[in-house]
Image (spheres, rainbow, N blue to C red):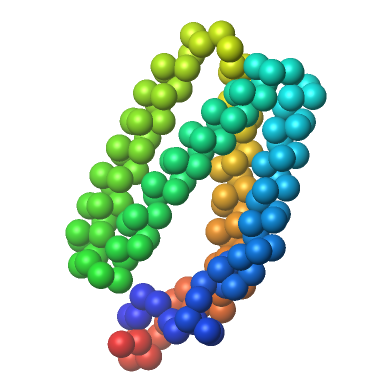
Amino acid sequence: MAVSAPRRGGRHPLLRNRRALAGGGAALVVLLLAGSAALGGLPALLGSVVGLLLVAAFLVGGRLPVRLGDRVPAAVGFAVLVVNYSVRLVLMLMALAALRDVSWIEPRAVGATIILGALMWSAVEVVGHVTSRRPTIEPIGTGR
């Protein structure tokens, strides 16, 4: 069974529209930061910035196993995936525990930003998968 199919133009569908994606992401970040500042002032704004940094570090760090997918055997790839996720989860929990008693940020803003950031990341991934025209399951014998 093949793992990947050739892409049109050799690029991921989300990367073909890089400017639109970057513009939409930047607009979302500005809207989120402005909304949190309007609702909770400076502590909420700082909490949203911290939340954005945490969710970006967590989710971007998860791209490593995906990039290794075609280059390593499945067992090694699965081990890398589990270790990578475990390390990222422990680091995220350590960061949240360290920020628990910090008075200059609003904890609800951090939490809301992490949840919204994860939902938006998931939505972008779903749109990328649906628009990629990449078969989820290929019949045996059609792959490499």
